[in-house]
Length: 116
Image 1 (tube, rainbow, N blue to C red):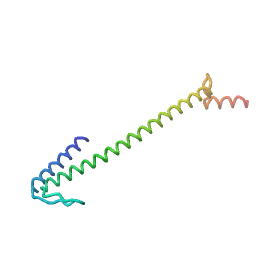
Image 2 (spheres, rainbow, N blue to C red):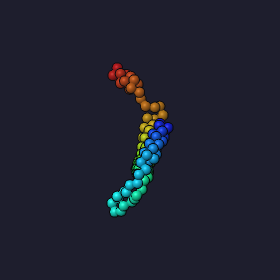
Image 3 (tube, helix red, strand yellow):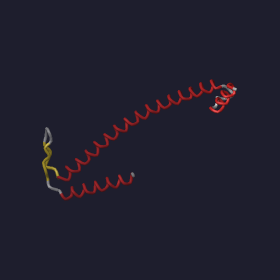
């Protein structure tokens, strides 16, 4: 799966490089409060791609942090539930006694014997 992602990214940057080479004309970029230019169109496309990748990586890192926090909380909850289950098993084992609990067949047989 990782190799597929690497190939897609590689082809994306190849296409970006080809577009940048063929679009060498100078342009002026109008941003909100200032103007940048003249700069080659390929540089504008490359900068846009780099900022897009950086933004996607930032979102991925934030999502990864959220997943790690959730996993830590779930591990703590699982540990607590396992301890509670162990305590309940121990209580159940103590109440059954050394001979073990009665099975369904044993309980039915003793009920039949008391009637006779």
